[in-house]
Amino acid sequence: MKFLFSISCILLLITGANKIASAKSAPADTVKNLYKLPGNPFPALPANVGRLFYVQRNPNPNTIVYELKLDSDGQPDADEPVHPYWIRYNEKGQKEDLGYIQRKFAYGVTSKSLGNGKWDVRFVSYKKFPLTLMKAADGKYHIFATISQKQLIVNRIFVKIEGGSFWVPNVRFVEFKGTDPATGKEVTERFKP
Image (tube, one colour):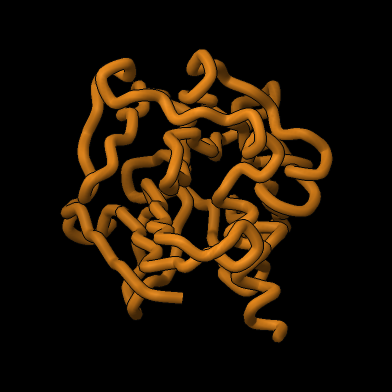
């Protein structure tokens, strides 16, 4: 039961529950710069120096972006080094901050300083999956995760949903796309929760 609750929470994180009633999927031909996942077009995000990673899922293209928040000295903000927000592609493509409930119970992240320029970062809805914010060899901050015994720089998370219900969707897979910091090669890891 605890496992189903955890999966429901992470799926709530991924599905954008606050806009489901009013959301309408944008036709593929109205969204520019598309790339394809099997049968599903998703907008390619514009370049953004501060973006750490983003989450996308079907059935709509709305995207949650996790961005590095800096203080006035150009260092990660002590209180909120990672700032999540929406890009609402199925509306006007606008950037929109998360609402209180989204931030505290679904899409937000918590962070705890580990010292030496590192932070432990966790999704509020799925705290058992650790992420680490730290500088890489390129001198820039990135989000790192250990996936299949490999440490990766996380670039994108995609969740494939087929059927089910709002509270118990049928998750086919979760896919992480990242970069191997040792080789610079893109790595894709997929698992079924």
